[in-house]
Image 1: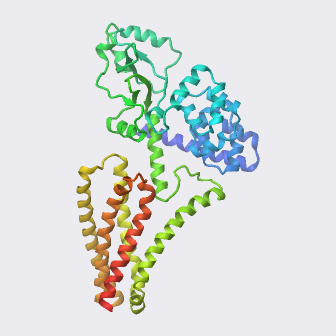
Image 2: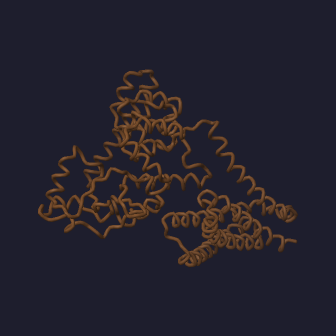
Image 3: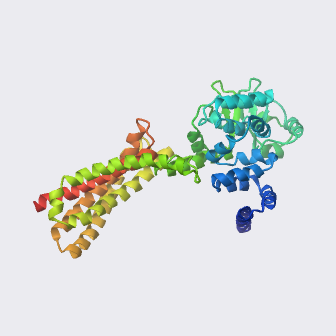
Length: 457
């Protein structure tokens, strides 16, 4: 295990070293040597270099990629970078590249192109490949049907293992990730799976029916890709068959497809928490980046104005006790952090399918208790600090009480907001942070300044 890990680390270091060497050669103007080094890399490494380059350098590097490598490189790219490069290619180049790729990868690429271009590319493909790609394109991109591949190897249950082995030897190569053969009847109704390990180790005279696994759950073609990913994670699958409404086999999903879904989900959650699109290009131009960020900055400004309006209600009190202006940010900040912690945990739980009506009340109870305990602990610490800082017992009590109130409200808001936003189908990762900030600011300022007004006026 240790030697395997060391080997992986060495390969990673070697890849980074080559990428650095290529960038240095590119900067020095040694274009011929740069091109040779570039095409000596693995497709995934070339894709990494493209994604890590600014747009002007990216297009130059893409022009140097050998035609026979383009298809393998393009499928390794993030969607945003892939879309940029595809839009620069003509229909003939797209069609030539599509002929070298598997149907599901072709469908992924075509979904990023205008309908007219899709039809032009499909028209240039062979009838067999076109039929496979069109069958995948007929499903939504975020469903099992849109995720699946059609390169399945099927066998009948009544034939012997010896016949199966002879059948497999007729293939020049097996599809990638062929861990199981899929068993179907003459109507292509899914029946079970035949593990390759059993095929190789069992008596060749046995029939498929005698050793196949029938306790297998097939995935319906309309199942959401996030649910598919959850099933793979929960059941430790590496491959799963996909069926239609009639139970007929139409394709399969492999673990590498699911890893892409998981990665995209993680990107979405991370970027949405900042109010950004999950397909944002790290090296997008100023013209594209500014408007995307400006929208959520504007929304945040509105929520800040609401918080400021609450503060303005207590302006006379603040004028009398200057220390209130100094301490106000502490109350709001503590509530914001506490609420964000809860919000992140709940959003993750929803994404994993762990949270429902049955356990929501338990979570609310836990968050209330956590908010209360943390509120008391940190309120006591802050009260002591304020006592020494301002030599004022009243203001020490006020900030302590306000912190307890705000941390409790923050915890409850962080738990409830994702559930509330989910009801009208609003993405909690996108809108939850802004809503939570508004709640914690308003509650924190109102509790702190309201108490101060009561004691000092």
